[in-house]
Length: 349
Image 1 (spheres, rainbow, N blue to C red):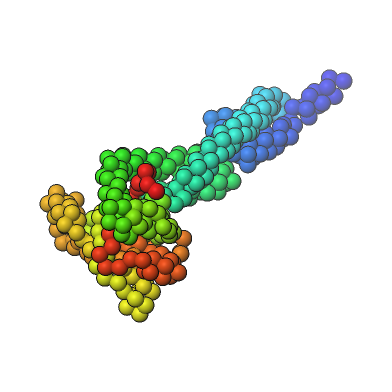
Image 2: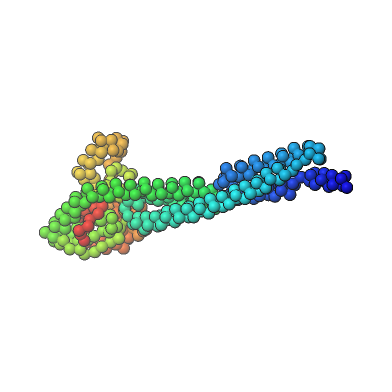
């Protein structure tokens, strides 16, 4: 009877907790697949260490004589490893859910800001100067979605932050542009008022170009006769500084030459006297102050010409109308007709 009891005892003690080991290893693998290595690393590493400790304890006990084997410590360690691996899975899941919620909220905010800025920039003269910041923000938004889908949460948040930073830089540029506008609006108002008054006094025709409204106005005797949709240089938001800057000049000019069909690169054209004395003085001052290169040229050949209607600012600095509108305008104006170009005028018409 004693021998039978001892035999049963030896058999029981010789069975290692292989099932516990397998369960702990599977739990650890599942935790890894759920991202615990990255998002619950401390807990995952603890579970990983416990699996190793349990495994080693099993090996140590198996190396002992049968009557002296005790697999209970290994079983306890492996059960703790199983629980710790499951906790790592839960922590990773919580982190993922919270991160996804947070990033989606931040992406939603960025998406809204992108849409609002896009609407606000449509048709704005400053668009060409700041659009690359908007494009960078949109690219960051799209990239954040890819990173989010790949569960690269930290990188996704960084990308959203980069997008918001791009919009911040764009806002700063627009603010600077608006401040420049505010400092010059009284000059543009005066130019327009002088042009209207001169037309009224003489009963003659005059042209007023408002870049912000993308409009060219034909007046006679101080009264509006016709309005034409207009397109400008590809960099329309500023005063023209030098040849090749893509800006449409701002100032008081007059027509110096009429170019009929076949005499203009762009259907028909009205050449104006850019650069005038003010343009030349500003150009020399900017050179002296180092704002532009000493090798820069002031340029010329600024016209009101045809081939417009593209729906965007695209010229080298000229004012573009549709061919139909050029035909209409040239019925009323000619050499000597005043042409006043302003960035913005909020009082007329």
